[in-house]
Image (tube, rainbow over all chains, first blue to last red):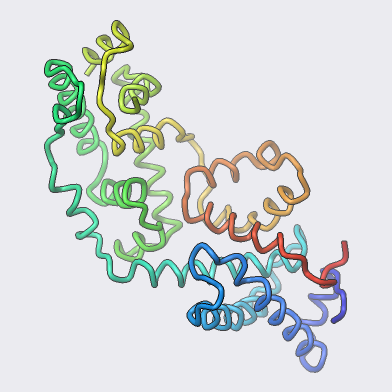
Length: 211
Length: 97
C-alpha cells in the first residue's frame, strides 16, 4: 500500500478511476483495521454487531470524505481528518442504539419521584441543619425554575445528571446537538449570573453540597 | 440561603449532606465561561487538537477554548477520546512521518 501525504490523498481521491479506487480501498482497509480497537468501550471484539457497525461506518465515512473533500484544510494529517469523521458517525449510531428505548419522560420520572428535598434521612445530620439545608435546596430549585425554561431544565437534568448524550436529548427535543449545547450554555450562564447577583459564591455552594 | 452559608462558615465541620444532583449542576455552573465554543466549532478543530496532544504539545494552552468545551461536553469529549485511541493504532506506512 502506497504512502501518501495530504496532497497525494486529495489528488488521488479527486481523480475518478484507478487512483480514486485504490485510495478509497486503502482508506476502507485502514478504517476496518483501526475502528474496532477504538470502540471497545461500546462493543467487544468478536461481537458480530461490531463487525457490522464498522463496515457500515467505513462505507459511510468514505462517502462523507468524498463529499467534504473540499473542506479539508490540511491542518492535520489527512488520515486524522478521516478518522474524525468515522468517529462521529460511529458514536452517533452507537448512542442511538443504546438509548433508543429511553424516553425523556422516563428519564425525568425517577427524579420527579422525590420532588421535596429530603436531607434529614442522611445519617449524622442534625435536624436543624437538615431543615436549613432543605430550605437552601428549595431556594436553589426556585432559582432554577425562575431562570430557566422547561426545556433548559430538562436538558440540564438529562445530560448532567442522567448522562444522556446531547445528541439523544437534542433528537427528543426536536433540535440538534449544536443548538442544544448553546441552549445549555445559556442556561448555565443565567444561573451563574443569578447566583452572583444574589451574592452567593459558587465555591461555597459547591463545598456545601459536596462533603 | 445565606444563613446556611454562614452556618457553614462558622462551623466548617458541621455535618451537611451530599446532594450529587445539585453538586453536578453547581460544578457545571462554576466552570461556565461567558464565551464558549459550540460542538460544530470544536468538531472542526478536533483533528488538529488531537494531533497536538499526540505530539505532546500543550494543546490546553494553545487551544484553551477547545479544551474548555471538551470539559463541558460529554459527547465531544467522548469523540475526542475515541479519536485519540484511533491515532494510537499505527497506520502501517499510510502516512509520511
